[in-house]
Length: 257
Ligand code: ZN
Ligand code: FE
View 1 (cartoon, protein in one colour):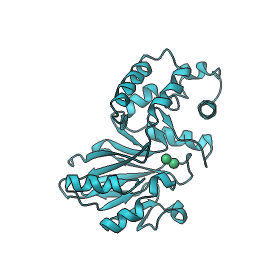
View 2: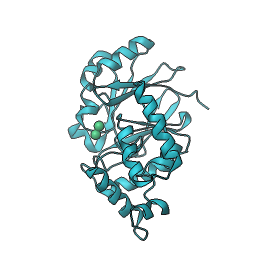
View 3: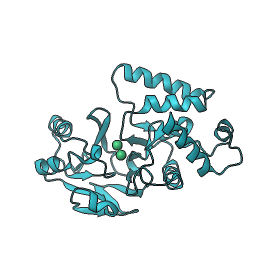
């Protein structure tokens, strides 16, 4: 058994997050996504950590804009999806589904989670119960389908939903309050959703991040993960439809919300 990784959640830009993960035994430190370099460099200095790895989830600017500045400042190795190498900063290590990234003795497994973009990947560190999902599974929601199909995103979400329920979901944006407002239009009678809405409002009132979130909480309150449940199917009037069709309908409603 390895020592759990230390996690730091770093607000960036207006509503993005970068995450620092540190392995105390080896001194290795990774950042997942770099919306901008300054908050990451400041956190590294504050903790006295040396950045060894930059892990990229997908090609959107608000996740990669700080990569080159951070690489130049730290010499860290840059890893991201091989499938998106043509539209990511130059990759020192192109990654494919099932590949592993090591942080000291901690293993991070690469998961393909297409939908928001085709080359979107997630990083799962099972020994620390952490998964970095960026704009695939989000707190109370999921990313918009800019490139993939609903069926693709549904498969990606089900992959993530199958991880241990005590996994911490580290997602890319502070969208939780509006995501849950939408969720409440579908499941106003879900008590776990209502109590989550209250907790999220309290956190935001104090300017605290609402991420990471527990996967168990997502399973209980995130309407996109609940697309396959009889209750959600009834709520949208699609009792006899497939799970993926219900997911597509919920995603379409969120786009109009
Ligand atoms: Zn994105
Ligand atoms: Fe994003």
